[in-house]
Each structure stands twice: as C-alpha cells, then as structure tokens.
Amino acid sequence: MARDDETTIATLETTPTWAVASVCFILISVSILIEHALHLLAKYFNKKRRKSLIHALNNVKSELMLLGFISLFLTVSEKSIANICIPKTVGETFLPCKSLTESESEEETKCEEQGKMSLLSRKGVTELQYLIFVLASFHSLSCLLTFGLGMAKMKRWESWEAETRTLEYQFTNDPRRFRLIHETSFGKKHLRFWSEHRLLRWPACFIRQFYQSVSKVDYLTLRHGFIMAHFAEGSNYDFQKYIKRALEKDFGVVVRISLWIWAFSMFFVFFNAHVFYNYLWLPFIPLVFLLLVGTKLQGIITKMCLDSQGKALVVRGTLLVRPSDHFFWLGKPKLLLHLMHFILCQNSFQLAFFTWTCFKFGLGSCFHGENKDIIIRLVLGVLVQILCGYVTLPLYALVTQMGTSMRTIVFTEGVAEGLKRWRRKAKKNVTLRNSESARPSLDASLDNAPSFNTLDTSLSIDTDQPSPDSGYLAVEILDEETVSTKQPELRQKLGSFEGFDLCKTS
Image (cartoon, rainbow, N blue to C red; front, side):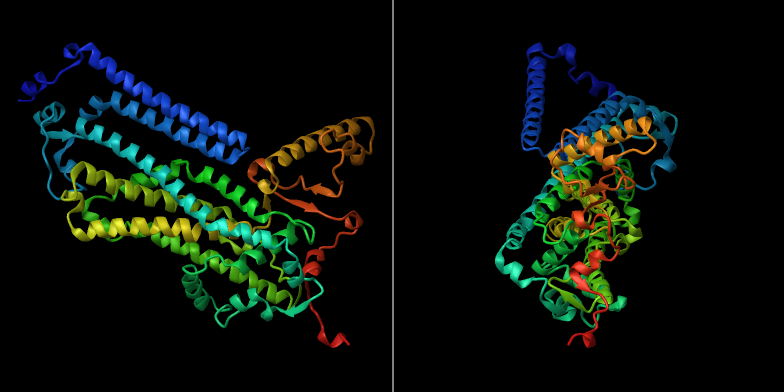
C-alpha cells in the first residue's frame, strides 16, 4: 500500500523545469528582500550610533542562522531518524494524546516487521521543523512587543527628567531646606507601619506593583541617589537617557535564545504529555516568576527608604538613597535580567506552541481536549505579555540601576570610546616612564593624551574594578580641592545629616 502511494508522488524527474525555477526564484527573492531589510536596519542603527540595537540585531541574525542549521540537519537526517526503532512499550509512554494514532510510512512499516515502532516518523520530523521555527519567531516578536510597551510606558519619564532642570524643582529641593524623612513624599509613600515587617512588606509590595509601579517621586528620588553616588552634587546628568541605553543593551541579551533557554524549552515540550495535566500548572510558571520579580523590585525601593531612615532622620533637600548590591538577590542585580529572560522565553514558547497546535491540528485536537485548557493558556499568555511590558519592565529598568557599580553605558558611545583610548594611551605612557625612571609620573602621561587634552584630571577611573567589557565600571567625579582629601562619608554629608542633634541648634 505504501509503495502504491509512493508511485503517485511526483519527483523532480517528473516536474516541469519552469515550476522548479519559479519556486527557486520566489524563495531566493524573498530571502534577498529579508537580508536587504536587515542590512538597511543595521545601517540606520549605525547612523544613529545605537550599538546596543546593532548588537541585538546581530543576535537575531545568529538565531536565524541557527534555525537554518537545525532545519538543514533535520532535513538531512530525516530518514535516519525515522529508521531508529524502539519497543512499542516505550513508544506508547508520555504521549500528548491518550490514544496512539498509527501511521503508514515506510519507516514505521520497517520497524513494524521487527515488532517495534519509529523513534520519530518522517512526518513528525517535518512538523518538528515548523515547531522550532515558530518557537524562535514568537520569541523575537514577543521581545519586540514587550520592549515596545515598556518604552511607551517610560515615555513620560522624559517630562520628569526635564522637570529636574526647572527653577521650581531646584527651589523645592534646595539643600538649605531641612525636613524630617517622614515629611518627604518618598518617606510618606514607603515608611508605613508594614515597612519594617517582612511578612507585611511583601504582600504590600505585591499589591503596589499593579498601580503606579513607577511613580514620579520614586523616579526623582532614585535618580538623585544615583547621581549623588556616582557624580557631583547638582549634576544635570540625563538619567532617563542612561536608562534607555541600559534597556537597549539588555534587549540585546534577552532577544537571544541561549543554551539554557533551549534546555528549558525542551523540558516544556516534554511536559506536554497528557499524564502531567500541564495546562493546570505549566502556564502559571511565567506568571508566578513575573509577580515575584515585580514584588522584589518594589521591595528594593522600600528597603532603600528604610536604609536611609536608619542613617539619617533629617535630610537636606532631597532624601538620599544609597545604591548597593546587597538589596538584590545574591548581591547580583544582573540576576533579575536572567529571570526576565526566562519569563519572556517561556511565555513566548507557550503562546507559540498553542498557536502551532491550533493551526496544525485544530482546536478540537487532543492537545486541547478541554475548553479550560484553551482559556487558561490564552488568557495567561496575553496577561503575562502585557504585565511584563507595561508594568514590570519599567520597574526593572529603573531599580536595577541602583547597584553598587554603574554600567559603562553611563557615557555616550563617543565618550566611552574616547575614554578607552585615553586610558590605553595613559597606561602606555606610564609603562614607558617606568622603563625610564624608578618613579613614574602619571600626570605627565595624562598631559600627552591627544584625545582628551582638555579633560579635567579630577576624573578618575578605578582600574581595579571590572573591565568595561564586563558591563560595569566604577567612576568617581570629584572637585579638584577634594581629590587629595576624599572622605568615606562625603556622599552622606552632601545629601543628609547623619546623627543630626536638634539640641545643638540654637
């Protein structure tokens, strides 16, 4: 029967050459158009000097190339995979459907003669190619949609940043004005009866993430703490653009499907067997992780306020929060980025699998045997997508900048490249001076730097910190008068009074 069906299938020997040429022409034309569109997009990003987005685009190209290799490998090994025979008792376990549907392919007939069945039929290999392509495509589209929603939500931050340059803002936050920490807007919001109790703080932070996840007072206070920790007081540094550059760089990481993400996706495919009743728990995993991350981010803001209260009850001007890694899980702010990566990938994989099974097998297939399965997967997938992009992502973009070290993208790309050249030139000059004299002069090497002759020498870069390639850089900008007499508690005194004694004021 299989041989009779095989004789009716047309091969290239019986196919008109014009048909083969037409199909090839269409495929090549579409591929060239896609490649040209990606090239124009890269050229546009390069013109705008958006290296982070160029890196993200290169990651997308890498994923497309990886999909091409996977598809090629499956096509070449299709017959070999189908000829792998396994016992029927093993092949009938962990099925996505309760009943096994027999196929009549030649490979299965060959295994049937041995009393076995194919590991994966040729038709199954073809369907697997489509599934992998849909998974990767949905992941890229999901990342674009999520970051698009996040950027739209953070658009209002531009007006908040512009407000910091107005006379009204400077008058309201005049350092000559003294206030109790409970009288500040930030203190009124976060210093409540539940703030110091962990069992009460977590439920409160969980609820708070759903309304005003990033308020104006939170943004302005964290901005002030960031600038006071890494720049001079009164600096007009554009914090909103810095966050935007940081988010673009994180997008380049999230859009790529790493090895461990592929491993989790394979576990996702495995747990789609009907014996696990996965629709009752698997779609909830991204939602639980997303709510956990949002609660943690809100909790970090509250803990920073409590930390400021413990060090100073009276503040001067704006309440000063101190960035530190110890507020984050395991002392690593970057861990939250990996969690966001996991959430986006798992949610996009679930939506992709749901879409693919509906398109390929229909809503009435065994993959969606019950109506509640369809409702749970669809509703939770869309809910996670909206919450992640419009609620959690802006909160993540703001709070993760409050680590101990600031990232190298604190400078624009032109300034960062200039600093790297200046640093290499300075180190080279110091090395030459070491070979000429026993006591090198760093000031002389700095004067010879051609790229930054007018740069203030009070800018110091701690070379003991991680290299710029690691993504973080510790930079201090001090006045010339304080370079030689820097005090550990200088940052504290600039923004608030520690141990302020009211009895001494007369």
